[in-house]
Amino acid sequence: MTRLTTTADRLATGSTLLARRLAARAAAWVRRARRDDLTGWQAALGCWARLALLALGGYLLWRLIRAFPNLLWLLTGTWIITAWRAGRNTTAPSTNTPAEPPADHTPEDVRAATLEWIWQRIGEAQGVHLRDLLAHAHAHGMFEDLDVATFRTHLERWRIPVRARVRVRGLGVTVGIHRDDLQPPAATSPDAPSPEQQKTELHPV
Image 1 (cartoon, rainbow, N blue to C red):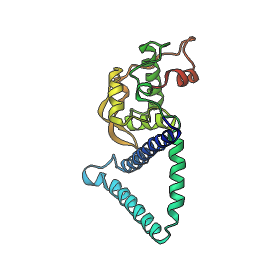
Image 2 (image 1 turned 180 degrees about the vertical axis):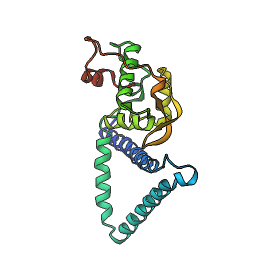
Image 3 (image 1 turned 60 degrees about the horizontal axis):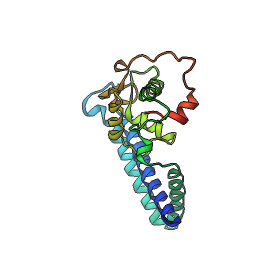
Image 4 (image 1 turned 60 degrees about the vertical axis):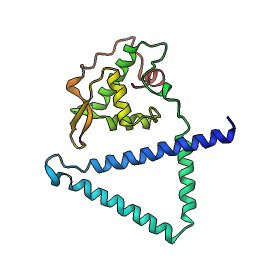
């Protein structure tokens, strides 16, 4: 593989990941506007308002570019730099998914570390949405090639129950993990790996 091909692959991969992140963040922002204390169309009014704001923002950006075409150079340069950084730590799916745990840890070790990570994300809430778990993993450079559906498949493969509807206060209702479906977190033993070791050796899920 030539250097040019490697560079092009990294930019293409980074652009794909960047587009997915932006779309996921926009969708999460819209979903957060749903009112849990209302029902029917009234509960979704906030979502429609935010969709309208996104559409208006896109229209204004288009008008701005039409008025100042040279702005495209700045936008293109910013996108290329961000995509290059996003594609820096990408790995093949076989090394970025839970299908093959590290050789020096048993599957139960990996599952225990995954459950501990999930409990940390749940905190005092009723549960955690898969989209938020995946966003947290993406923010730490992990599982960047996974979408929510594939992420759910891997969690269920590791015998971690996933519900189609989990309500989290302030975040609405969507697919997630409910605290009632998980075993209470076990006390950390003296020989348990540190959080730094789990991050560098196990990786969540």
